[in-house]
Length: 152
Image 1 (cartoon, one colour):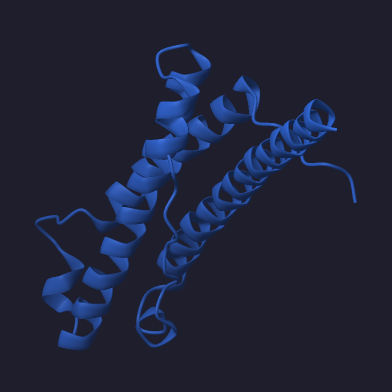
Image 2 (cartoon, helix red, strand yellow):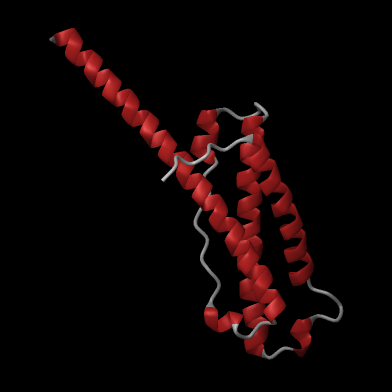
């Protein structure tokens, strides 16, 4: 298996643009309107819409924050230490299958798109964190070898 590509400005910008478009779609889909679908929905459907809307919105806010932190780092406005300390992406729970079954299929597709974007960002985050661990292991190994030579 090939080593993961490091995060670079082109990847972050492409994902950021995708996240902006998806965030706007989520906002439009879940924003209350005068002819709100909640008014015609059953109590269970209204609850499902609210819960899944909150999950999708939160997922997109987390994704946008993660991407903005990486953009700031790549632009030189955030140090690597700050990014590693405060720029972590948190796991996001998947939608509730029982509630999703109550929603319009197009809305479910939009929710799934937010999950897929978040999953992609989590994979990038995990690869990036794994690189950090490998670097620390390499440094420790080098220090140990240097220490052995100094004492040996």
